[in-house]
Amino acid sequence: MGYKYKATMYYSDDETDKFLRDKSAKPNGKKSASHYLYSLVTRERENAASVELNQEEVGVVRIYPEYTNSRRIEVSGLISFTALPAFSLESKATQKRLDHKGLMKEIDQNIYQHISSNFNNPNHDGSFLVVIKTDIICFYTSNVSETGYCEGNFLANCTLIHVTRSEWARWGGKYDFENIQYIKFRDLSKSRVRKNLGLCQLAEIAPLDTVGAFFIPVRTTAKAFPSDKFPIPLLKGVDITFNKDRVRLKPMNDTQKKRHFG
Image 1 (tube, rainbow, N blue to C red):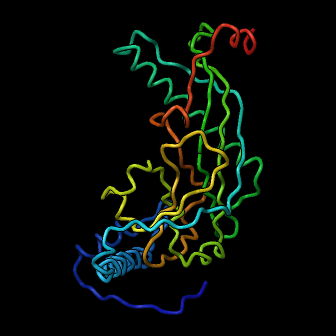
Image 2: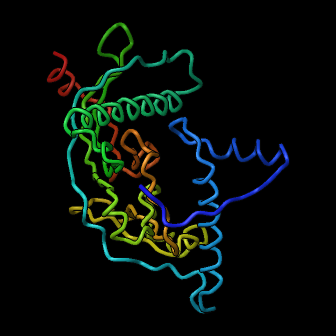
Image 3: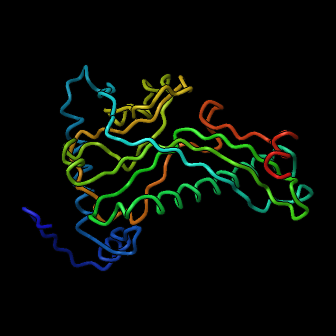
């Protein structure tokens, strides 16, 4: 892609050169000093735009219409991983937390595998795919076998957003798809949320959770399309800290164990 404008920076000290080289490194191993410098200019533009707001508008959160250009899928399957021995842990609560972290890690791997098996390389044209885990239910047991495996089955509801160049441009480069986050409704007026200035809620079908929702931060100025930043789907959403309407990780009862493991 060609660029309409460019600017050149001159410097002579080694410290600046080393600093710029370190900061220009990208997650995919490539380096781009221009990309890093552009991000600094973009940040300054946003700061300037914030200053220009009318005094009565400072700190106001702008709520935009729901984002509906997404796709909902279900991912389900069996999971299995080696559980840590109970005698090595400080308490049952610690063991439960570590087992739940292991369960979520395995669920994430299953989601990645499902996406790679059912979608034809969504990044081939420079676009990227955002996968938001909106809610998960998992039944598990850690004493199925003598080898100490933690096993179970899960169902994850996910929202997919395929961010193409045209979708990015449709919103003027201001929708920050890379940083979709869950926010409780009661926190919308707090200072840590207000810094976004704009929020666009992801549309969901009859969610059980009435406490909060997933939002796309809306920037005050445009940002360049991150065409080479995400070689794999960007997985976001729930984890073990979420409320029971979003994440339910339940030990199997005897009937469930017999049904799944005999």
